[in-house]
Image (cartoon, rainbow, N blue to C red; front, side):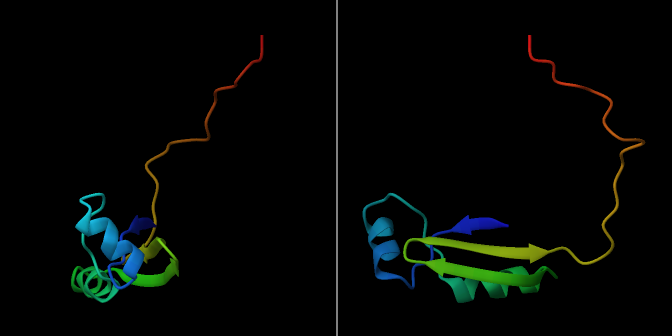
Length: 75
């Protein structure tokens, strides 16, 4: 999951003109992710807050040998 500046929203386009954020329309980002083989889980657009959730193809695996064996102690 990561956020981006959806320039299809007028407020977000204004951020680009002011040099505050980068330019990226949602359709271009979705197409780019798909071209690299990622699965689009969801895209969310709430005013000037936008994010996309993607999944890498394949099976999730871990390199951990065991559970964490540390503890946080309040002194």
